[in-house]
Length: 229
Image 1: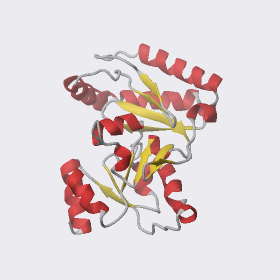
Image 2: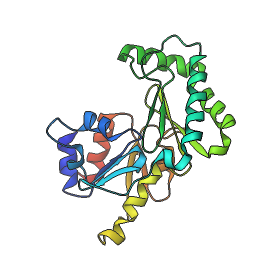
Image 3: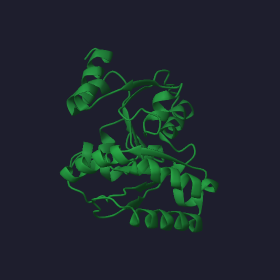
Image 4: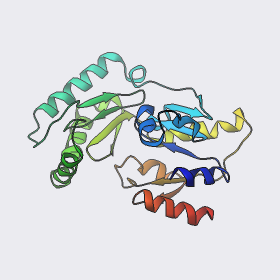
């Protein structure tokens, strides 16, 4: 994948967008001695709330500042009590993570093994654990104007309305004023493009050309075909 992206970068600007924090992308895409921000023209962590252009940080935002400390504490406390009362077969490690742009909840915890993750993913598909919890949060905290998106195998994100993955496009569009570059064609590759998935909004946005992918191999195949690599 790295070598293919390197070839692609000779043809066009490349970037990634993730709901997770930069440290996770460094772990997934980079190397101990190679900053992930040096591998892409644009790096959009936390849906673009934490962003880099050619390794240089771009203006960001904060979930806490947007929502307020008191409302945030009430929100998380209620969510943790909800999770505590869930009758699910596995609970491992931290149940939530506060990020700049969102709060990530994992009803089973973030310390599960791969085998446990596979098991709970099947359980969630059958019982709708995340979907039901999201509906409960939407009802209880409708005043916060938050949106929710399922991502990964076992977790989901809560973020202010407008802070989904389309948030990153404001940085791309700002390049017109910042550097004089206008990006007329933006291709987005994602797997969770169904409604409620964390790729849905960006995939459907009129400013992007969305591509559904089924995994890394399929992503590479589509990139090779699309960009003649």
